[in-house]
Image (cartoon, rainbow, N blue to C red; front, side):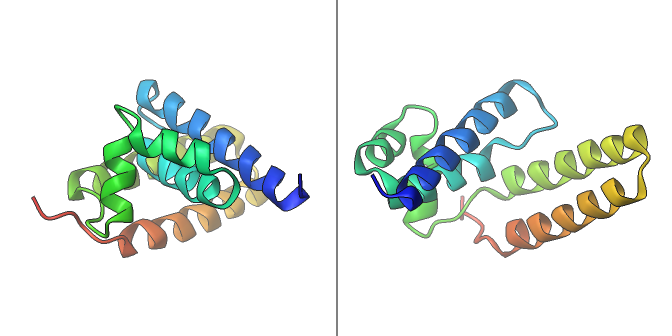
Length: 122
């Protein structure tokens, strides 16, 4: 099994686990992690990609995204708000300039990605 495929597979499962945790932890957005999982699985395992696409809870998110319909505005906005709140709390608790810089950089890149996603028409 090529190393690249293993890396995509591992990242796919890691992001899916983060997405599942995000269901229960409101500070962690579920949708971006599920979409990342679908992307990783599409490059590493047809079986896992098909499983995720047909999943009862995650399937609609992936199918809407892959069909070009985008994500609901409410979902995107909730992800942005909760992401920045959790990163703000992390910056406050850690209190290190390098960690603050890293979190702000990651937050900006993730926000740009989320804001560029197409919005699903209701």
